[in-house]
Image 1 (cartoon, helix red, strand yellow):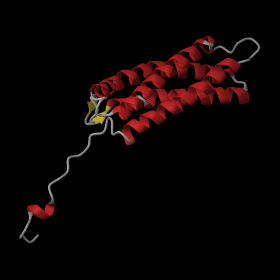
Image 2 (image 1 turned 90 degrees about the horizontal axis):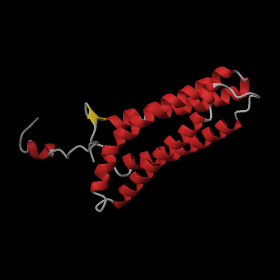
Image 3 (image 1 turned 90 degrees about the vertical axis):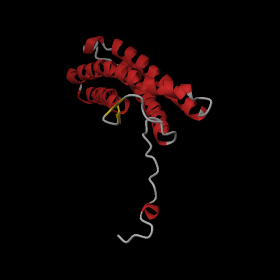
Image 4 (image 1 turned 60 degrees about the vertical axis):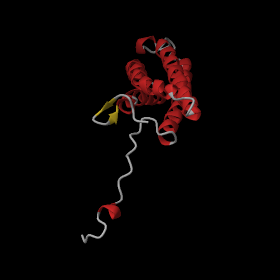
Length: 167
């Protein structure tokens, strides 16, 4: 099924998801760096990566929604694709909620008095797990169910075109 939102034949959703994936991963790396070097820069970087990632996440959801609705329209013919698409969306919304909580726990990037960031780090680990599961479902949609893929039409046989002619 060809993607409903495209630029130059390329699905916009596939492009849009790279922003939150990259930023959420950068936030996780920022947390790990803070735990190692205790430089507040890394905690602040993690906060801003999550905050900007949330904005990008809304864009990713909004560009994937038309394809989700197209799968929904044909769910009786493709129940497996519908189940996977629904799981992908549910995990995507779940990740949005988890990362919203994560941002809220971070006090605008200021390290709490005493330096303990256990709760935001735990939430970030959970977020990375949810991101992985959501990505797996997204891969299932593309590679197993061909959602968002513009399948080429079979070409006429070259043998039939030039029958009896020398090339």
